[in-house]
Length: 215
Image (cartoon, rainbow, N blue to C red; front, side):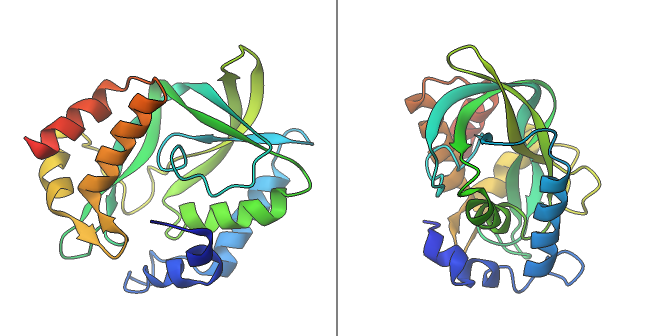
């Protein structure tokens, strides 16, 4: 399982060491992405990070509050080809992202201004080893009905690992066979499905994919 120690020690980024040079991001480039995103933040003070994948069951964040939340205008999609972590270049799998359309139920974590910088660099290293995501400031609806500003990582369609076809029929075989230093691709899907169920969320795409992998 991914831990803070793996990230802070540099061991996590080392698992991506075999990636082509034009895909793997250096720590300096990851930090620059974070600083650019923070500079574009539309407000100040505490803010929320919206989790829709492994952040739900393994946030690794020093958060001040946690709430179920809904992000409108985006849906889950295994649209990013994965060649490290839970896959290899020889046996690629698929990585979860968000694509335009629909809505997504997930979990939001509130970060205070005091811990934001320290927590965000860990989050950026975790999410951006290849720059496959585009960090956005957007609005989410919290479980109590209030609107809040949140940071979310969506799929970057201009990235070389982006795959247009994320249908279950197309991706299930590769996910079922992919594995790497961080475990199997299929295990990620099953953990996500279980975490969504435990949170009371229904995502038909993830549910059907989880069943399809073991069928």
